[in-house]
Image 1 (tube, rainbow, N blue to C red):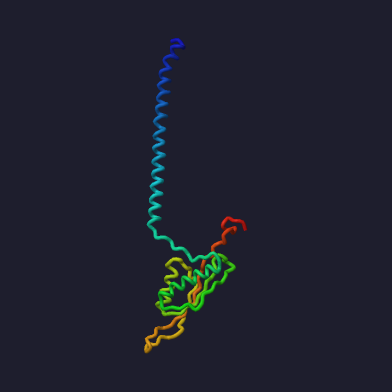
Image 2 (tube, rainbow, N blue to C red):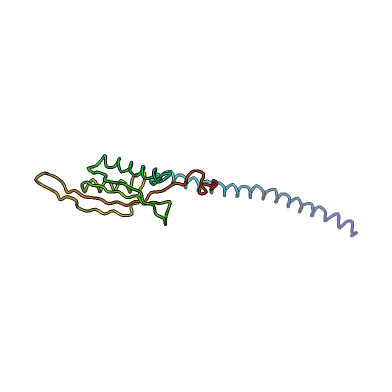
Length: 179
């Protein structure tokens, strides 16, 4: 055989191989796209499941906050006023005490008087209803014993220490403004 005849017989084989490679490349592209699409669909389904779970959870109550010491003390006093209005209790005092170790979380102190049920309900509401208050200390002592003849319940005094949250002032460095 002459060299030209050998080249002529190899060309159809090479053309067939090249055509097969082209068909294979054309077929692999859509398969890879399908796999990528399947992965995106699975990721979207996972995100949807997480979003549904988050939506089903009850909302997290916000903590007691204020834009300054006076606003925080006012919010605390307002919260206490609302709670004692529903109960047999009285607020004797409420004050704010700065904490140098934690300036954004000052202590709020209150002194209240009332019945055992009233003070227990007040503490429960502070810790479970919005706005949440983190109770640091609660000291209850008997102020006046019960008098069955007068049908008077035991009078208790509650000394309460809680934490509030001070929000940064608008334009402060903590919010990204200029100091």
